[in-house]
Structures are given as C-alpha cells and as structure tokens.
Length: 148
Image (cartoon, rainbow, N blue to C red; front, side):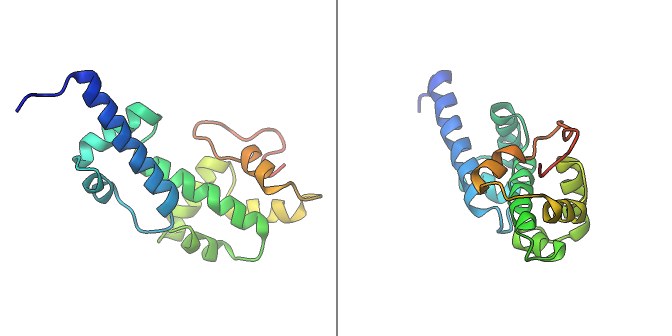
C-alpha cells in the first residue's frame, strides 16, 4: 500500500483535528478525555495532543477547559446558579479544579466573578459580553477586569 504524500496526509490530519475541536465545542459538558477524543478520529492520544497543540496552540484538554470556563462565565453572569451548580453544569467534576482553572484563565475566582457581574451596571448583549470576557490563556485581565 502506497503512502500518501506529506501534504495530503497533513490535510487529512487537520480535518481530523477540526472534528476533535468541533466535538469539544459541542460536547464540552460531557465527560471527555484525550483518549476518547483520539479514538474518535483513529489517532493515538499522544499524536492527537502533539498535533492539536501544533495546530491550535494548546492541548485538547486546555481547549476543553477554556470552553468550559467560557460557558461558566456566561452562566455566572446570568446569576441564577451557584458556583457549584455552574461547575457541574459545564462538565467539571471537581469544584477545586474548576475554581483553580477559572482563576487562572479569568484572573479571579468564580465567586468573585459572579459577584462582580451582579454589581455591574447595565447588561451587555450576550454576543458582546462573550467577546469582551472571553478567557485567553496567558492574558491578564485589564485594569477593571471582567466582566466590564
């Protein structure tokens, strides 16, 4: 059996990585792990992690947690759920891990974020709030911090 040219193989790998990213976006609240994601696209977990990081700048797990935190921010701004309820709603099984990751990405604990959102004057449209408050690894919040 002849091997595919490297450029063709790269395109196939990118399509598989896009399917993994799309699955994470759709199923972020479900239990997902790198092994299950890799099996879904017939890759080894190590290969998927390396290729995903090369393509998107972060590991599949980091991307999953960023999606979960992004959704948690929206739920916390809404204000009708406790931090614990939000944690489980977005698919995290450990409140400690959720709170730690939230603080790393957002710059404050989820309880402080929820409180600040409740005190914020006026409501931003959700599409604007999502862009303005989107968690980005390695970026510290601005002087006022989220949710602005």
